[in-house]
Length: 422
Image: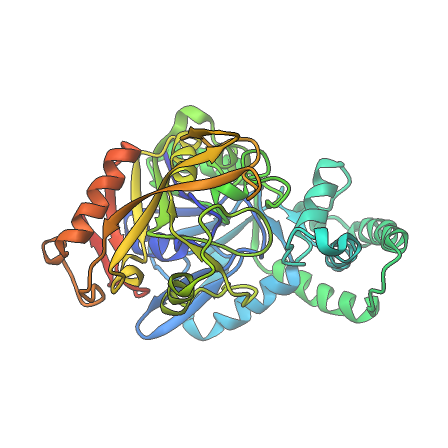
């Protein structure tokens, strides 16, 4: 069986930390979608690590890490990531395996991303400009480059043909994008050379064989369920399936081989970039959440928009993913609020609804809140559930009752030790 670990909001829920905490129980950690727009932050031994493409189990001796076919890889960013981990004496050839079917992000994909976003003006979707969208467009357009292509002698010809096509598309957008493709290509070729030192695998067969031999596998998602290309707040979404179904297509795992589905959410809500956000706060409470929670994108550094917990959206994510257990992150950030609010329904077109409608833009939706008592106690030094203040226990109990799923982990700080199992 393969267990899944997923974000249930708009990303940035703390998946990297939880994968790191859980890896000791697994033999294989496999990323199944997304690209280097993901930034998984892990903190232990006084050091903060930010991973973009490499699975979050890389620091554990026991785990093999697989980059699955559903992931898109930028060799330039990948090389930098490996270089940053060089001082930790990790045997990447042994511990890091790359799917031949994973698609490659070319320098011209990044340029296309920038040109497309610039052409939208105020209607831009808030892309991270990493070339993710254009790469997935080439994938579905059936003319992308894959990791396995690098094993053939003619891969540079294939690259040139695709890059030429991209340059003509950039011209079509008719925006002022300054670039020197030769410099970008030099960096790209260096990244490819580094990538080729690693072991390329037929990842679906590898996962199948691992299951057959009784190995425990954890599939690691990137971004969050509300950014799913089908079920997220379209068009302000990512370009892949971030939900549980994406693990099946992103690793080649059949649905009946999925075991536990671990859903991660923050005790409040955040969002990076553009798009609707019904519970967003523009007051002192929102500012406090952002400051105390250090809400800045791990990849982009962009400040995250903050708001109260949206149970309508969270229930939706629990349903479409079939979540079996929950993990609540950043409960410590809410310490000090005299009262908390939880969105339990929306006012929508003259009625009160509790499901996520087609459009949740502000002109269509306003949140209905339940107010709850806050707590003053500092949670960051707590090591057991018995130390929790009564108001936090009441908050957790209310969420479990509404979501019909147990909250098994409460995170009370960024370090791997600040993780309380219930």
